[in-house]
Amino acid sequence: MRPARSFVWPAGEHDFCLGIGELRALEQRSDAGCFVILTRLLTSQWKIDDVLQPIRLGLIGGGMDEREAQRTIDRALEIASPYSLAVPAATILHSFLMWDEEADQPGELKAGTEKAARRSRTEKQDGPSST
Image 1 (cartoon, helix red, strand yellow):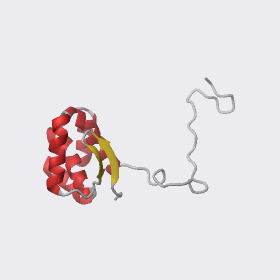
Image 2 (cartoon, helix red, strand yellow):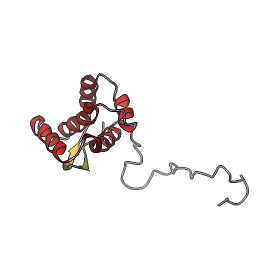
Image 3 (cartoon, one colour):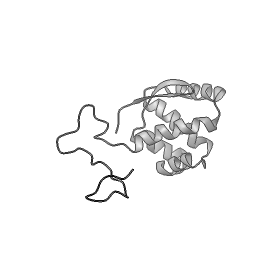
């Protein structure tokens, strides 16, 4: 899994990590798979725990004590609505479920691995580019 990442969210800047243990705990507490939870967050069909649990478990996975993580969530709820916390929850969950390993590496790409430039669908194969 990925190392902890720092995110800025309504409660400040904190380290988050969702390893396999945290992801399994999230699934058990929500009685849904992680991608189901992510989909609910992205489509505004979430339950309260879909918002709060990825953040809380991410804080714990990032090294915060369980009680301090809960206090941090409680403080966040004093200054931000669950609705406004849905975006950071989705961002945190997304970053630990899907990533591009090569794009996340510092430095240049390995020789021969340059990503192909996308072409316009209207561009002719041998003709000039359309604008």
